[in-house]
Image (tube, rainbow, N blue to C red):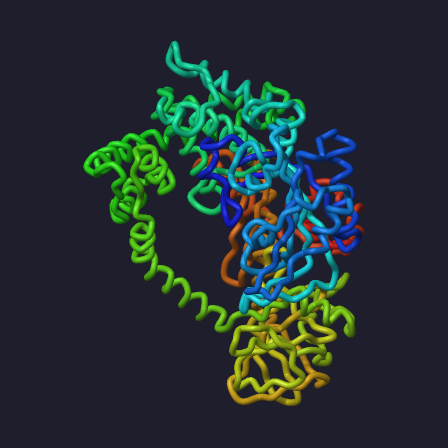
Length: 638
C-alpha cells in the first residue's frame, strides 16, 4: 500500500532527513480482519512470517504490549503479552508500553484499541537491548505494529465503549524490512534511495560531495549535507506518487501538505546543497525510470503532468525563499546562540512573506536557535479569531442546530432490535414528487448536558433538539455530495422542523427542533413531509455537477478526476484534480458545453443496478476511493 504520512495526528514530516528511518512516503505491508480472527491468530501469524518465512532471528525481536491506562479505566493487555510468550518469545523480550506507544487512535473520536509492536535489534550479538526499545535508537527499530481495534471513543465525552465486533489492522514498513533483510544500516542505504542520491548530486555544482550517511553532530559539521540528501530523496518520492494519483499542490488541505513538503526539499537543495532553483522537478524522471516506474506505471504515464506541477511550484517558491531567508537570516543573526525568535517575527514570515512556519523552525534549529511557537500560535489565533467567529455564526444561522450523529455503539444497539430504515424517496423508479410518507418513531437520541449521546424513550423539545429514527422516511439523507432534505415531521398533531438528515449503518436520523414545547415518544405515528422545492433545487444542482464533470473531461481529457462536490439548493461546488489552472479558453469551452446540456433538455433517468454491472457501463463516472452500495443507484442524462 502506498502511504503518505505528513499531516494530522500521525505526522513524521519534521523527522524526515534528520534520522534514517522516518519517511513522508513509504510502502506498507499489511493485514486486516473485520470481525474474523483477532489477537491469537494475528500474533501467531506475525511470528510465523518474520521468523519462519523471512528468516529473522527471533532472539533479536522484541514485542511490546499496552501497559494499561488509569485515565481510561483500561487494564494492561496481558492477553497480548501471554500470546507472544506462547509464540516462543522469552518473557524478558515482551515489554509493557505506554498509551502513547501502544494504544492506537487515528483522532479524538472513533474506533481505537491497544496495539502490540515488534522491534528488531539490527546489530545483534550484544545481549539484552530492551532499554533501547521506543528510545529513538536507529539500531533497535519498530518494524510491525499490530492494532487490535476493540473500542470506540466518543468525541464529545472521550469515553470508551466496546465495539460490537473486534478488528485487526497491522502495518509493516517495507523499507525498514528491506534494510534488515539486506543487512543495511538504514533504509537510506538500500536501493530504494541510492539512485536518487546520485541523481541529486548530478544536479549540484561540480565537485559536490556524494551522500555519506552522516547524522547528528557529524552532519552538522558539514552543514547538514546528508540530511538534505535524505530529505530531497524522500520528498521527491512522496510528491511524484501523490501527483501521479491525482493530488494537486494548493493552499489548503492535503494540497498544502504537499506544498510544505516541496518547499522543505527545495530549501534543502538550494540553501544547503547549492543547487540551482528548478533542480527538484528534474528528479522526477529519475524516479520514473527506476524500478519504481516498473512497479507503478502511473509514474511514467503521468510524468509530464508531474514535472509541470513541480516546475510551477518551484518557480513560485523561488521568490518566497529569497525574501524569507533574507529576513530570517537577519533576525537570527541578531539573536545570541540558543536565543529564541519571537513569535511575531515567525508569524510575519508566514503571513506576510509566505514562508512556511516549519521551515522557519528548521532554519532556526540548524542555527542553534529556537522559535517561540506559543507566540506564533497566539499571533495566528489573533488573526483568525474574527473570521472563525464569523464562519461559525454563518454556519449556525444556516443550520440552526448541530446534527445528531450516531456512532458504532448506537447503530449496533439499533441493529439488535430494529430493521434498517426504509428510504421510500430513493427506491427504484420513484417519481420526483415522492416527498411524503407515514411511519413510526422507532428511536430517539439526544445529547445530554455532559455531551454524551443517549437513547431515550421520551423527549421534551423544550430541552433541545433530538434525533428521530423512523421505520419509513421520504427524506433524502446527505450523500453523494447532495445536501440532506429539510422539511417537517408531524407527530401526534405537533409539528417538528427537520434541520438535518443523515444515514448511519442504514438508520436514517432526522435532527429535529420545535418552536414550542412538544413531547415525542417512541412508537408514536409520524407523517413526514419534505420541502419539495428545496429538494428539486438540490437535484438540479446535483445533475449539473455531473454535466460539469462530463464537460471538464471532454475539454481537458482523462486526467480530470472528481474529488468531491457540494450540492445545495442555492449553489453547487465541484472539486476536481487537474495538473494546472484552467485557462480562459478552458473555462469558456466548459461553460459552453454545460449550457448546451441545459439547452438540450435531455431526459434524466435513474435505476438501481448491480454494482458489477454498473462498473461496466460505458462513460460511467465514479469517484475513486468511494464505497458504493450493491445495488447502486445510477443516474443517466440522455
